[in-house]
Amino acid sequence: MLQIKDTLVSLDLAEQFFLCDLDSCLGECCIEGDAGAPITKEEYEKLKEILPIVWDDLMPQAQEEIKANGVGYIDEEGDLVTSIVNNRNCVFTCYAPGGMCQCAIEKAYREGRTDFYKPISCHLYPLRLTEYASFTAVNYHRWKICKCAELLGRKEGVRVYQFLKEPLIRRFGKEWYDELCLACEAYLEEYGK
Image (cartoon, rainbow, N blue to C red; front, side, top):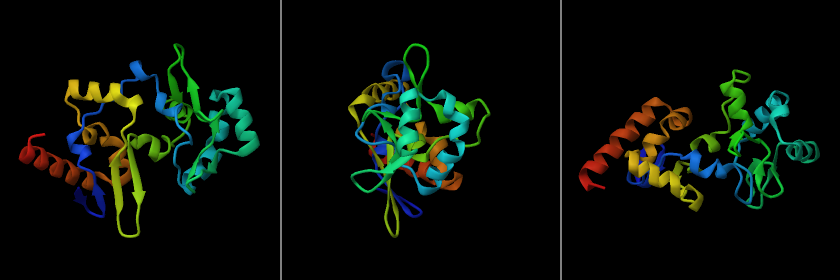
């Protein structure tokens, strides 16, 4: 583990390679799973606020789910997550021609229709954060659907912490990220992974 300020960071961020390969996986991480994406209470409120902006991009089934149950719910583990359709798709998924899954929120952001990028848990994936009283654990979540991302990351020489620069800065700040980079580089130099 690496300690960066008030976080404990898994060595996987330095050791593992990762680079999303959307041409291969078609955005499967927004489709598969038994619950929606983890969100904060603030993000839940923001999702309700921007709903009119993304509404027309959502699938009809997603619109029906949101009308019936809202944009989020408390899952079996007691976490607040985005609502899902048919026990699969996040309600905020939409599909591009060719079947690639997209995030309707990120699409609206890139088109300048909202200032909200997407929930931080989505932006940080494949990382998962666990908040404790005195620290935050930052762990790499390995999932078979991301095997193509691991292979592409290895091929291109991109480590997890490098791939996730933007969301890590968004969540923890530039100073934290710079410290993480130094720690990862020192670890890799010493242990030659």
